[in-house]
Amino acid sequence: MKKRFSIPAENPYAPPRSFLADPERISIENIQKISLWREGNVVVTRKDADWPDRCVVCNTPTKGVRIKRRFSWHHPAIYLVIFLNAIIYLIVAVVVRNTCTVTLGMCPKHRSRRIVGICIGWIGFIVSLCSVPIGLSLHNNWGYVLGVGGGIGLFTFPLIGLLLSSFLLVKRIDAHFMRIKVPRRFLESIPMLPDA
Image (cartoon, rainbow, N blue to C red):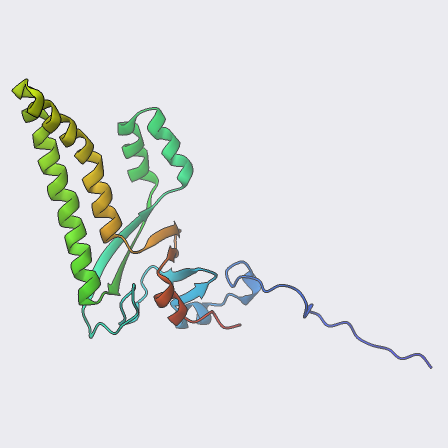
């Protein structure tokens, strides 16, 4: 007599699929219960989610101290419009962007680093902007040095400020979710999404 065996409905050797890529696993109950989870090396969050009361950089408790951040994202292909005209790019980017506002925790050390970065970026930019016309109007060697230094500072100081104050990188924002890259310590504390 031949033995009969049944083939399982799911392949146990298949690689795991993303929660959002499998519409059968998405239910209203699961989306309402879970508002922040890890998917690979990014955190996926609902737009109205409450983030944990921990620093998003070093994962230390923040004791209720939080900052509100507004993130914007548009498709990377829109950057090609800059080659046509920067003003047209700004208009297109404002029209097609998706935004998300979240309240997240940040410890005093990283909060002060963020404030220092913002101050360096803005003050350096304003001083550089003023030094270019002043330096070029002096018509001597020091004036040219001041003008060229100011021109370099117009790009350098905002870049330094951005590097000091940015800890998070938005990967994508759609109608309901935001995918954002966070530092490793915080990422490891966020749970993977359980199976529905």
